[in-house]
Amino acid sequence: MKRMIALAAVFFSATVLLAQTKKHGKNAESRTSEVKFVPMNVKTGLWQSTSTMTAIGGIGLPPEMLAQLTPEQRARYEAALQARNGAHTSTMTHKECLTQKDLTTNPFGKDDEPNEGLECHRTVINSTSSDAEIRETCSGEASMTFMVKIHAVDREHTVGTGEGTATMGGHTMKSSIKFDTKWLGATCPAGVH
Image 1 (cartoon, rainbow, N blue to C red):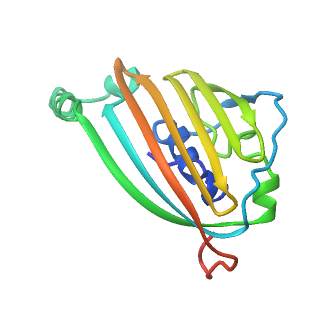
Image 2: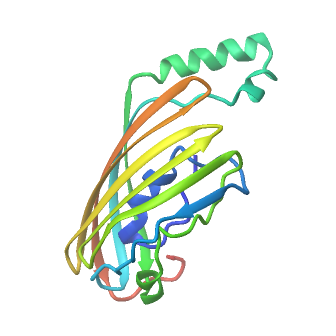
C-alpha cells in the first residue's frame, strides 16, 4: 500500500503510518478538525528519516472483490492471510527536502490521496512548535483508527511514534511505528523532494 504524499521529512514517517493501510482508490470525503496548526520549529533543507514499522495481521479484501475470486484463488488468498498473521517488522530510511512552504502548510489538514468507499475524519489534538499529535478515523469499506505523535527534540532532530488498527473484509491489522528524523543540511540535491 502507498503512503499519502509526504509533506516533508519531518512528517514523512507520521504520514506513512496514516496511509499504510489506507490507500484504496479515489474520491472519498475527508474532514478535518478546526484546531489551529502551528508549524514545527525545525530547519529547512535535507532531512533523513529512519522508521521502523511493525504490523500484526493483515486487512482483507472487500466482499465484492472476494466474490469475484475463483475457489482456487480464494484458497490461496486465505492461505496468504494466515501466513501474515504473525508480526512483521520493516525499517526504511528516506531522504526528503523540507521547504518553508512545507513548514507553514498544515500537513494534517488535507487528504492529498482520497479514498473511495471511506469517510475519514482527522483531528489535530495538539500542535505546537515542538509537538504534534494527530488522530484519524475512517469508516466505510474499512474501519481504521490511527494516532501519531511527533516531537521536535531540537531544530535538527525529530522523533515520533504512531499506532493504528485497520479492519476490512473480516480481517484486522494492527501496526505501530517509531521514527527518528535528522537534518542533514540546508541544501537539497537535485531529485530529492
